[in-house]
Length: 273
Image (tube, rainbow, N blue to C red):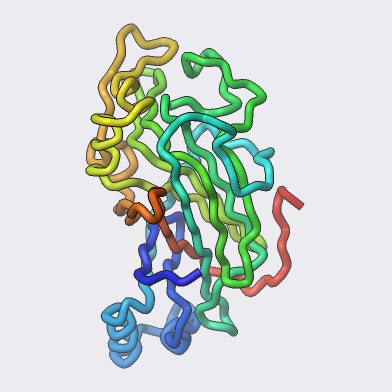
């Protein structure tokens, strides 16, 4: 997959968002004690100026309460749920002690998110208005290709709400997609966000989003209005940025590159194998 312009996602722990061409020397693993040299810094900056890579250390992002280990292996997630179709391409990359920057093949990208009405699959009626216990819509995982790439066909999620214990009372989340990436013993947990302007347009003009700008949940005595990224409990504090989304052949298409500090372990030990 050719990425004309790389968009980078801010993930968990030490997370590297990388393009993998011609910059390996500046990406060699440090021993934790050697300071960065001016020559290395200049090389990193030159890479950024040429849109070659970005290297970011970021805070952890929560996986949230609705992750399940039993997601099916598949690329098509919607199971007929209504909503704006989304093609999401994710490239996983990493830095290893001996190989510099490289795509991570044979790794696992696991996704889960709400439907357009803000409902997760496999969640009981005490947490959301509809009991979806045992259902699997909008969950799935894939193994990355030799280029570290996996692509999913899904829909744009809705925003979500759930009752919370005092003093919070109510927890509202902006539109987002949950991601776990497994490579060897490394697990990256992050969330992908959308531009406010895109989501505003869907809720103003497109069903079923338009009918779900106000939501309630079990334990709440009235509906609440949708929130945007800046009002989210995680988006501002994590330093996250929205994905770049564009319409390609009539389909909303998002591309993201995420990465991990790979520990040099070539095997794959995950809960899916």
